Amino acid sequence: MNITYVSTRDKSNTATASEAILQGLAKDGGLYVPTEVPRLDVPLQTLAGMDYRQIAYEVMKLYLTDYTPEELKGCINAAYDAKFDVPEIASLREADGAYYLELFHGKTIAFKDMALSILPHLMITAARKNHITDDIVILTATSGDTGKAALAGFADVEGTRIIVFYPKDGVSDIQKRQMVTQTGDNTFVVGIDGNFDEAQTGVKKMFNDAALNERIHEAGFRFSSANSINIGRLVPQIVYYVASYARLLSNGVIRDGEEINVTVPTGNFGNILAAYYAKEMGLPVHKLICASNENKVLYDFFSTGTYDRNRDFVLTSSPSMDILISSNLERLIYRVCGDDDGKNLALMTALSTGGKYEITDEMKKGLADFYGNFATEEETAAEIRRLYEKAGYVIDTHTAVASAVYGKYRAQTGDDAVTVIASTASPYKFTRSVMQAIGRDDAAKSDMELTDDLHAITGVTIPPAIEEIRQAPVRHKTTCAVDEMESVVRDFLGIS
Ligand SMILES: *Cc1c(COP(=O)(O)O)cnc(C)c1O
Image: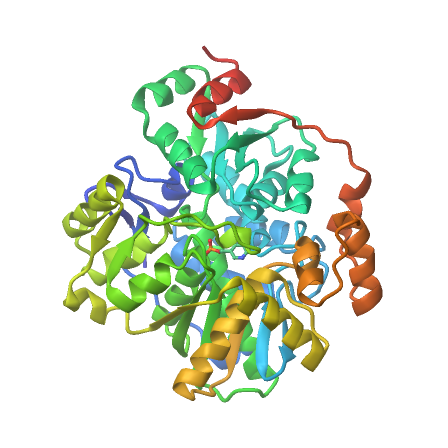
């Protein structure tokens, strides 16, 4: 079966998988969605006997139908190799009755590596297939983790450039160091005087600016996006939910067909949307538990049916979730309004003009698979301490938000089904917050010194990604105001 992708804002804008991957965002500002979600065509028992790459192929072949089997396998093999420091690629760890799906064993120790290790390969393959000769310019706004993962994925990939904007004061010390030390002649990292939403809005504006696009095309470039709106990000993320189910099955934790719950610490709504697609494909999933930090727009949305971004933006200890506009939610909205592009466009227009929209009762019924809640800063820290003291397992702040929300879900519902919690970052990426939570912070020490302390206390190996940036020189010093983003891009590309 061939899958076609359509824009959520105008269904007459269609694309093949490879075209959608190249474009990122549709021309009308909408997101590409498959006209139908394919069903898994291999029995769960068979998947249980496969390794990560084999499962990746079985899932991704259903979505990327214009890639040949050889092309797709080539991309998968290039991505999921020894870059990951565990053979399972994504490993499961049981602690206090829940299963933590560790998605941080790649190059930059956060879950974005799961998709961004493969995206450059999917994109270069797509360019070849579509006879594109322009260099691809990846334009990305990051709340911390996407930036580094995209930089690591695209660095020195021939035929590509990558430009990353991050909120200058909205990422952790270690996140910032990871980005500004990035090597590769085709990389460019810029700190902006603004928050993540402003960075993301600025990037979207450039994507939609016809004159700018024309100008860069003349110079031999074309924009594409590595943000989680790209279906080339979304599809690889479905894989690890299927793989975790397969592992639970092969380890005898669950029976064939038994439903599990999935809990996801959520920001831009990409990771949990992948879990939703996995469920729609036939993976036995009961609830999709959407965990927010104090920027609890999604919790309010799931409780009331009103999405309202008009509120103060809170800087939390889980910065990759400090987001007020969860872009990928649009794909779910499109779905629950019955694939109605007109209705979706009206809601998204309301969001961009007035900052809010309300869905109908009929649409609310489509959200029954989801449970939303949030964790405060205190609850997040308490969860890190609790799990460490009870199970000797150290989790990062984002995972802790999810873990705390799962605790609330269980207390409220009594549902004790096997539950997978997406563990989205290594505790070494947010060392100070983690040390504060377990009562071992020392304000006089640098983050790097605390890294050694965390290692001494927990015995967890310090990931190579952290060792590497200790000595690496700073290569990117550019900063700019929000309204200077375009001129920074023009300068980097050498166009007037
Ligand atoms: C990006 C990120 C998230 C949020 O994921 P979304 O797909 O944006 O919802 C959560 N935790 C960490 C560590 C992240 O990097």
